[in-house]
Image 1 (cartoon, rainbow, N blue to C red):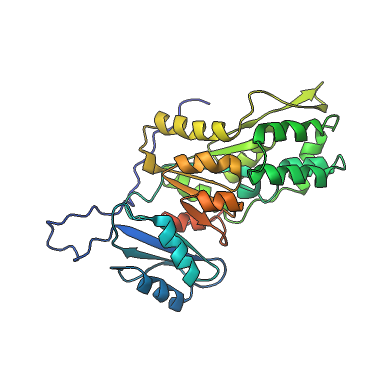
Image 2 (tube, one colour):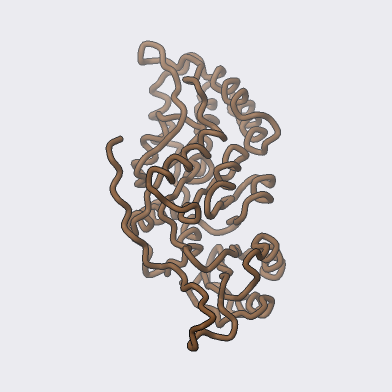
Length: 323
């Protein structure tokens, strides 16, 4: 892997509250609510409804035609999730993320792959070539909902792929895999601003290595499908399986290696095997996630594409890198 580059300092940190400064407003703006419309412009009336519902709120600041920040003051231990849920109830179909105003731009980003950075589940697409997609997809869904343990579910699904030609992987990548909207822009913009990025997946290196390169991640961590004579899948995965514990461990390892504070990290995912990583991150985001994951995550994006994660960090639309 080689030595990682030293991360450049990010300049978008919110100001600390200083009660002794005469030029501070009466209420120091400690928190920010970011509103993101999934399509089209963000309705000014919706922004005003949200602002009116927040105590000690400031004038909304537009980040783009589809997003706005509303700064407000709150107790230091404010319940971000409850505040966001209250605002969602007022703003049908608009994503809301509430967080502390300081240190919003992240220096380490970990992302799940299947159904997060790409729109498909790779193992389900492989199973289609064995005529077993419906069966395997049902197991995948149960595992991602947290109804069954990830590791045995993965072994069971991989066993059903025994004998498939390795060439099928190339066909799936070419004909079936589609990047989630905003994936390249999210990663490119964060990297241009000094963030280190890692794609983490309970899937397979045969996919993650290629997809990470397509999107622009610094590195990737995943499982490895075993192959017989270089031509056929053996129906097994190399142990130990990289899953829920591995994703959280990867975040901690990279955070320590890069000497970052906990709040300098962001992780996103959609399934139960992402929950520990999401909980460990400075900003953990459930992205179009399963109900159990969305309910537990500190933040959630239910409607917008991946560029929402740039708005959440305070980036303006004109700062997004075109890809």
